Image (cartoon, rainbow over all chains, first blue to last red; front, side, top):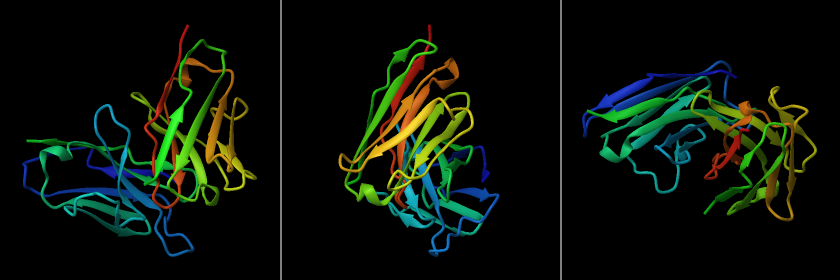
Amino acid sequence: IVMTQSPLSLAVTPGEPASISCRSSQSLLYRDGYNYLNWYLQKPGQSPQLLIYLASNRASGVPDRFSASGSGTDFTLKISRVEAEDVGVYFCMQAIHRLTFGGGTKVEIK
Amino acid sequence: EVQLVESGGDLVQPGGSLRLSCAASGFMFSAFWMSWVRQTPGKGLEWVANIKEDGSEKDYVDSVRGRFTISRDNAKNSVYLQMNSLTVEDTAVYYCVAQNGHGNWGQGTLVTVSS
């Protein structure tokens, strides 16, 4: 399954919103009714931290300014008001079978 | 709290071997597939291998099939990656990932293959 993520990079003014898109070459909707699509943020020198699991569920401790939606092949991650601590590379990952990944979106502050 | 702790990364010469370990806690380890993923600055993220809950099914990316072996010990809540015939292209940070719906990652362990 090929994951296509856009944009490649994003420069955002603090307090402004941001949106990242992830598209899969096959449906990520499994027979159990869940979409096996996760979103992660990787800060420099750190391992990926889980933001969203199963397409729209915020992981424990993730601020509510992060939200995600989508089903099937089209998914979106939104940050309602970007803060300085949100900089890093965001990527999507599908977990239907062999894990595959979006190419990443580098978010920086203007 | 879910925790995945990798270990075993090291500097090894081409042709050498390493065994990576991942100790899991905070979820029902024996109920989920587990994967190994590697990351390099040049190639990005690459899935390496995964293993079914009971170890009865295993799958590998073509570039490591025949050289790497994934295994697990559900009694110890651990998954392993035996890596043989290592090449410089295997140099990466290796992560274990829980395919538990949440997709938790460990902190990674660095494997460097160099003479």
